[in-house]
Figure (cartoon, rainbow, N blue to C red):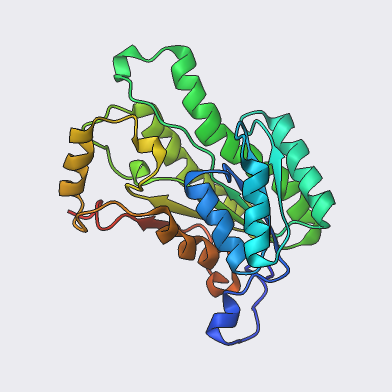
Length: 265
């Protein structure tokens, strides 16, 4: 898998999705979307580094994924909102695995606060985890990617970058995810010589991040989605493998919206 400036050889379409021998790092990889991304990349043949902050089961998860797919999987603790922490983790992963080909900046948190009531700390926390960490993760990886001349960065954004959700009040979350989409576009141009950068924006996905919301809100969201249901996390795996593989060799700066039609009406 080379940079977008290098034209790949024509190959069988299924082979283009093959990640055998590649090394991928996934932030927020011990739960939710990140966990399914880690599984999907491993199923496609990649060795995977799961980056987590506070999981007590990350090591066991890594061992399970490794055993199921006959690839190397390891867990690394890092506070991704701190530049020095994620830089050290990325450098350690590249050293331990011998290289690094793919980074998925997936960590994120959400909260519901009326815009006029945000404290400085509440606003700052969302920005640090959702936007700052995305940049710091990509920046740390780019220091490796630039020297090797090829690589792949995938950001997890959200449909909240495109629309304003109701009934939840989450101006900070929406703003942070809009920033991630624009960040991906900026880096895709700036780093085009050595890196492809793309973004995936999920709609409503059945993860524990939604459990903080009242049941009536979740029922309302189902009614607003043309598909009439939320997605399961495993339904996103194919998109991440596509973005990480040569199947998307000419795609950079894209934002793939996967939402069951939620943003269309």
